[in-house]
Length: 485
Ligand code: CS2
Image 1 (cartoon, protein in one colour):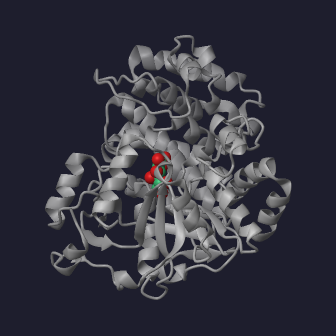
Image 2: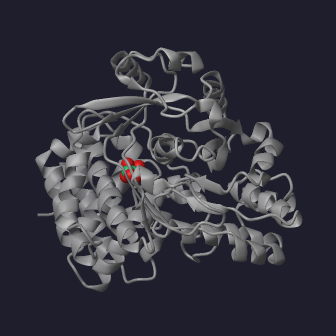
């Protein structure tokens, strides 16, 4: 365990927070305290607290599962301190103990405690990493899904919420009633126009609750778009042990991430913001070009590598990318399907970005997991591939590589690799009906899965046929035999 005491006698190679930890105060509430948030937003905030001590973070977990309870206990025991090891592809690493997260609340245990923070005027930003699929947008209608059971329950009993939408809107309602200010709602998920998606989701909920309140929120809150980037693997018990052995710490919540990090953020804040530019955040007027490049190259490339990689039997991303056939397929996809549809943001080239993505995926010091990348594949296919697929169909380009990606995804869902290994593929949005489609040996029906809803309005007959043929090849000859030339 690490505690305040540990900070007084850290091993020589470990950096301490560069500010007085008792002198910082919360200015941000964050929903979804996963590894990515701890290595990204918290990492940037960590670096500005010495200049702006009133922007520390209170974290909130929304689920009451045993895993969440354990995490909350660990955070409490460590006073929310944890170590971050940053590793470069060369193997060089640095370790710091981070203090920006000052409290962690489990919402189901005490909803009022969460609301108390959210209505406190000191909180000026409410941020979130609730995953690409977490905004409850129906991909077919493009609207906030009011039929969702948890949303329905919150709308029935809005003062005792359980969803992020319920919490944020109830807090804003209380601020409105009290004649207070609204806060900035800042999405840090990998979505194109994540701020616009968040606006649609929160206003969608608010409108269903009270149109007057929704109007006040629309006029007073802001929802900046941002492009976020840092590869942050899952920390298994084995990795935790290695990290602690290398750092000399005894941390129950150690974290590892690549040394690369990027945050491009629109400067639209309702009630002030931390001086994030001091920590390297690029504050811009329009983030669109950055988002397109990151999502369609890095995130889309990640799944294009890992779906077939899992089938071959690779557990780690760096091993999958060492496979020249999988690397060749990834490069072909980026060069032929993605790059022609993108515009490079100023100051960079798409070819340079492609090379940096490949080098980042090859980072051996990090051992990122292929199954982490493939998890929630349904949302990832929709969010990361849709634009590229639509463009390829509309421009009548060769659909083989895209079909190979889809075929690999569907075969991957079966949970068996070609070495005879089995694994659990995690699809949090799939219920029994979707799993039935996914596991069916009738290849036509599996194309009805919601993963492919983003291009359902187009003529997909050619793409569908290619997927079916490639799945047969994968079954008969293995996934590598199906890689398009
Ligand atoms: C990954 C991301 O899970 C995924 O799909 O591509 O978690 C990726 O590591 C981050 O977006 C990097 O910024």
